[in-house]
Image (cartoon, rainbow, N blue to C red; front, side):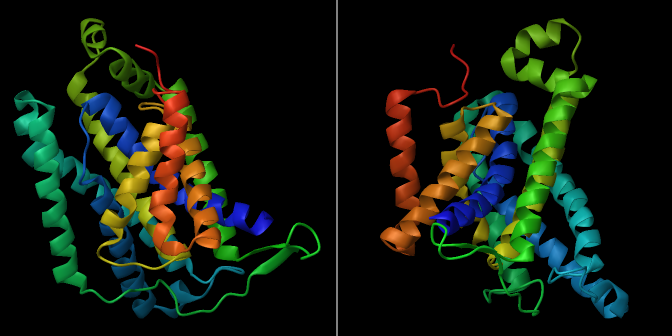
Length: 305
């Protein structure tokens, strides 16, 4: 039981990070961006290419950090992936979505489908279809509790790193949105764009910040997904439906709602893998989503309009 819970939290932490950027896009830019999942894939592969280059340049970068399977090269590459994926997200808005914004949300949604297909196939052409890993080092799961206690609990150092850094990242984002001037402007724009504009908030500045933050978080989620499972060029579309489920479940526009929604979706997938098999993991997540929305249609933390 505890192992299922731990596995669900680890899966959920990856979903939560990706869902936050998607939730921000929905609440501030006001359209469903179906290309957001591909940003996770691009972030993961950018980090892979950068860490491979650093490891080849010097063995110091490849030396594992403590008990983890990766070295300093991946940590440095994670920062680079955040920057480049954020620029990619902003570039998509500048070249495509910004030009179509006056056409309405339906046009933007269709354009995001096209952007997703283009990004996915470019990644497939660049990297091929073979699954990739950040490290060939094998890890042994550490026993935190014996099997006699609710089935026991074993977690690898990499999984513990992913869960811990995810919580740190989400907390940092919460503090930024709560206490910084730009963060308060983003929250005001999400609640009432017209009133925010009247009070002197620059909507374009808020939109740029939304794309940059969403892209950076997507890169972190992609790297964490690669660390805990594996990387494939189709990983973005595989994660897209769980991301949307987490956003809707938690309530559009709520950071902590997206986090809680991600954890619930992750737990549902973890339970389904154990009970009915991995092929039904997405279906199980949506069963939970439908059940909660029947009781609370606006999501767990959604605002009532």
